[in-house]
Image (cartoon, rainbow, N blue to C red; front, side, top):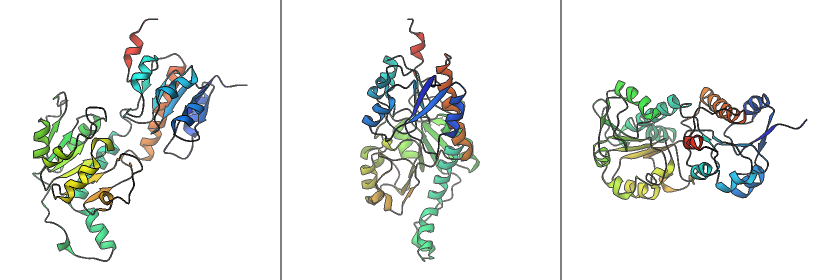
Length: 324
């Protein structure tokens, strides 16, 4: 007997689709996977599907139109910069995400990167593993208590980071477009003040036209030469060429990067080889619990749409206000 629905999973960061297949099978839906993530392959794979779920692959208007009956696009993740949301809205297709699945993990990872920078853990680790046992090899370190953590953005992850940072004795400031502190009692500042005042600046903003390469040469020049830039959000928020130039000029003490543009990056580039730069492979979101939660939440929202229900996390809710 043929399946009632077909759901395309464009790509995934886990070994199989057992969780997805189990949840979808309960409504008679089959999983379809793409041979690759380039647009032509996705267009071919999307023909005759009822829903699309994507991890990092780009879901363009052409991919959505390929089926002729696509009813929803679900993101395995929080940010939706890899989905043509405006095109989906024009087509009446709800786009969903999973906004809270890895809040604890990413805030922990950002804090871990901060501690690694503050205590020069990456530097000491690399040197010691190569046989150099030398405290004097590193620049002077400052105690964490009393230093300032600046947050660009104050969403779920940044708000989760606030009490963890305060527990270490850090002062916390933040900049958001709205100026809201969301009940955190964090002092809100302008973007120039955030740059100038932060000893550690942790990035927690979405990637869009107004934030792309926000940390360019001009912005980096406003930071303290003793400051560290930490990014667990999106690689495109930072101009990597400008960051490397700033490090060469000693305009920054270092950086800790979990996200890049593109991904994976060319790790042979000097920026990623520099001892002042800590690099992790877009790993901030990962734990056994968070990945399972992500997979279940994304599929539950696909199931909701295919069963004629409104899913929980719709990024373009205006489609539901349009009367037929």
